[in-house]
Image (cartoon, rainbow, N blue to C red):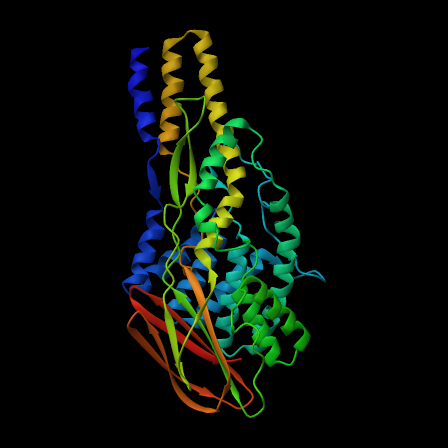
Length: 433
């Protein structure tokens, strides 16, 4: 049995190791250095060639093409992604969420990475938001309005279906899974503090309100504004109304950097001392929001942080942890049972074979770290509904760097300016609502 010790030792040394998705990391780095083509190729290959991650590839492709200024391609990919998450063939749209919250334990034997990827609630909402922006930039206002109305239904349905399931969850029943869950969910508490839930997006509520208000759909607009205000209390911009007939309105959305990537962490299983499981985790501190100023018609004024995407992503992971940990502990229990069976038989070679197989499986296994990695860390908004019609050069000042874009404002109309800022620099576009 001494020959078994090196294997056990190697397995225990593997515990605590952290790894992350190299392809996703490379794609983000490519975007940060201005190599959009590499990121486009990565995302579109994920959308068309992967077996389990097609839907994730669709939103990555939409976002990467958007940041590359390829707005028609971005709109097409976001449309495909939403169609995979929302069935609009029936009289009332129907959500297709896969596993709601933590209830499904399917696939307890296989690796989590072989489970089909379904967009998570915060990803659905951001796909809707960016799809709307892409449609507006492409001049497809009516389609964008239709999706603004759809976003109201989707966010309410997510609260009713997904939110109700999350709120009634009490975590893992298994004692080993519970021990791991309590520790690992606690590691996320600081990150999740900046959001109240993972299934509502205040920027999407606000943008939908702005569009519907401009279109004269006052009741729906006010309802959306109030939802945004509840999620972003004290925000001076979320209740601003459409402009008067002789005035113009400019609204600005600012995206900061890229969201944190999930990493695979090996965690020892209590009782089964030679066993470990793999779970996704964040090791990053809460992000520091840029101080952003908009130079409009009345000098500079600050933008307001409205959406903390890193917090939404971490909160989503915390909601998924009970199912993730339970599945993986179940696998560990299965492996331990197999080892106990051969130990009882007394065949040293069989013991070596089973322990070796278990050790190899645990050494090569990684957690399912898939998530939408080209999202920003957070978003800020700004609005002025009392601007004189005319031509403007709007300045966005961030930490000493300045980005300018010319906009044309018409009487009684609203124009959107979208700006994204990463380590590579600024990207942007503007359109009339």
